[in-house]
Image: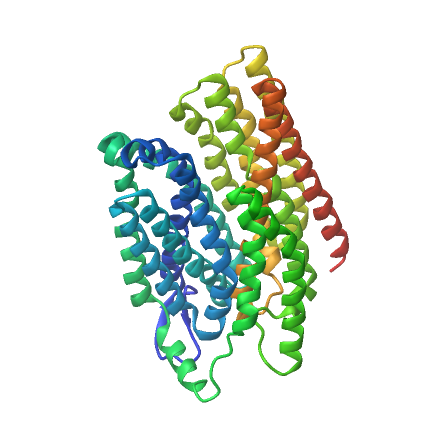
Length: 479
């Protein structure tokens, strides 16, 4: 009897175990997400232990996200062309070095530079995760792998803040934040070592030797232009400085230049950093639109909840973290349970999952209002937000699988990088807009008013995603 998890890769004499490959991929994915979700908990410790200013604290968050965002597409392309295993290990190694530097940082400047290194490392290995799933899994197996992808995201987002809070509590507010970064050292080293042992490097080395004469085409000008586009869009929303908004005006011009360059580059028989034919796949194009609309609103949910409960109602941080726990647990369960329906009813599943997100958001809006005006217990929010968890888990596994369904395996890393980049941009825009709406209404009224206004904006974004999902379903009707 053959083991369906054992695969052979063209150009290699070895056998490889897909479960081992998936374990390493999910380990690294969890590590990169925990590095984002856990930082909010460490900010007070950073302020007291390192003497960090508000601007310093802002860049602890923004520096990582910005470095992560600008590296996704170039790293995805490099993995597709030069070998995903190699670039995965490079990224995981760089992330681990960045974690060490963060823990040893003597001041806020060094810490923020180290966070950029961390973000670059995560941005390098993250598109290799989607690329390798696209390469080594097919059909229902790929859907199950992407379900594990969704489960890992949910678990990491839930565990990160709790773990960081426990570490800070154990080591104290002065040095506790350092140990939250040192925590990633053994995980990062394990990912590197297991990647070296279990990934198919030999076939990639042969590929590089075979293409040595013609040289690998990484499209350097296209790379610079696409990085400039992402930077011009994301930086103003993260820096929030008057001069930075000028970059946003340049973004359409840079985007036009990049698209023009990519077309001309391809017309001359070269390989652009992004094959624009990827956007001819309706499933990929629509998947980007639906997920971006959802990320525009959904990712601001817990930021608004945390500010409202902590600043407006004086709820402690631990309670706020626990309120979100049912959401994360049900999201993980939902992503795994619904995978059996993705291949047969994926678009319908994505549509109804988004509708459930609308229900969860609207009922959470009502619960938040009742907590602030009628004195309801804050735990009511954990019930209403649980609907969001079910919806997000089901949507995540369906959308990820359907978006990548028609993408050729040789473009898996680039396509995954594009998808994650659009989601990061949507997150940056949404967070900036929705938190601004929140504080605008707080300044003119109460925290309750800010919460209701912000959650109304979140619901509208998800409704837009529902509309796009319905459009996608109709375009694929009968296929």
